[in-house]
Image (cartoon, rainbow, N blue to C red; front, side, top):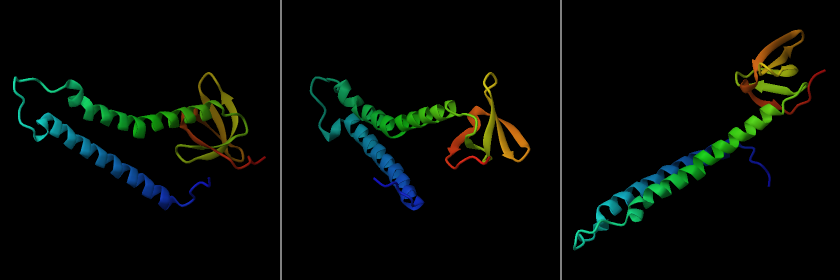
Length: 141
């Protein structure tokens, strides 16, 4: 499949996903209130309490949806970023979280610092964690 190149499509999808998520939460909260008030049915004779599983179902469903739509993708993204940072080597073109573009010229493993050349004869030291992405263009020699 071809990746979407239009940012407007991606933006629309993100807005749709957020709106969908709020809609599902609203329905689940309403369902929770219906279950809590007995669903409009008359009170049971004998004073039996409603089934605990039925009462907790909306909250369990909300947690599952929250996990699938938010927590799991974020964990995957963090894992991919950590793998990318661990695989950095000399000669890679990188972009820091501050937007600085440069080429890695040295690595200080003990301190977790990368020496990045940003211009001819100009080198800076940045933390490994501040690297946001690896630039796929070839490094200038």
